[in-house]
Length: 151
Image (cartoon, helix red, strand yellow):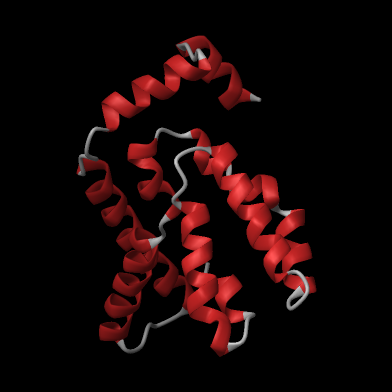
């Protein structure tokens, strides 16, 4: 969304933001693709390069739509990642100066390890229910998941 809005004129940003949000918040993949194509048709005369680029990555845009609706926002938002980067910058800033690049890397490694442990303890709302639905829709078993991970 930020990439799209960064490449359009200021006068069109609010309209485009509203329309693209409708696409991303559609109920299912078919509805999202219909809204997306309307969006492309409407703006392709004004922003042809941007719309062509969006068409080339169309399949990648809607991969999260295969997930159950309840956990989509957990997947397509990057708030947790932004928060992590902010925390890393804050912690490194207090050190002011590291002895070497290797010492800074070790410190970042330890911070990331701590954050990972913190995230693993976090309980996502209704995750078990939605994961079960996803497994049933895609008929995943332990053997399927294991073979996909190996491949």
